[in-house]
Image (cartoon, rainbow, N blue to C red):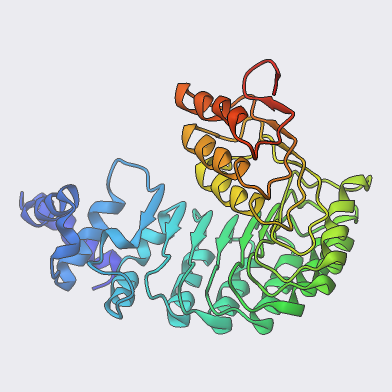
Length: 375
């Protein structure tokens, strides 16, 4: 039964005063038990009807609200039944849901819909491969597609898929602003993305390439693109790649270029040797997890970072615990730490203040309020 027939059926039922099926589905949805139920085709049609006629705006769609377990073949059937809802949603979360290249082909129809409501699509940790990526890329160039955020982390993307993405990003009108390709074997195909970053039709602002096998050669291509005008990129993530001395230097030297527009550049402090002495991540939403990962790099002997600025980065007491642990490390070279504009409570202040009694403590300047604390 297609959607039009389903809607007609429910109109007829409503006119007859029979709301039992709709009420039954509404109860399932409110209780969260819908993932436990084995629904018939007519019941799934009722789910679609209820969701599409709900007074609540369809902002975020999570497939895992409708399936009992992730990474199950049955999830593809549920996805197909709920495509009409996906077409009306602004953000669609499908990560870890066993979506295949066939699922991507079905999703392409949602991206082509007119008007297109979809702005965010999260597909990380699915085996969609290059074929699935090609299905998505074919519609990124479509004028009806307004997708702005696409996450494809750990999706089996290789050179072929990367080439398709590069072609899509060159297109006019590609509206994509964020692209996450972390944990894919891209290696030298990163050069394709570097070329397209310089294209005026490419509006990409955030790019994740963590653990993608990027080498110094790829780093050289990226830095060349970032020196171009107009590159729109503001955030670049390169942690977990095989960057050597030359790659790290290329990234560090970027800040002196007049065309440099990056606001955030994150690459591993674990590189050997790391020549980075000054790092300013102020104004970024690192949160406790981001600070914790950063602290892991601070404890590595090859890290020579001396000045770290984390102004207004969502640092809390938990972050202070991570920082305190890193600063107690014998290998920490940090001399200045700036934490102004964060929500640090009494516990965080105590953790930082108590550091001065530690023999490994090397800080000369610590700012965590509106004045400097010289230690």
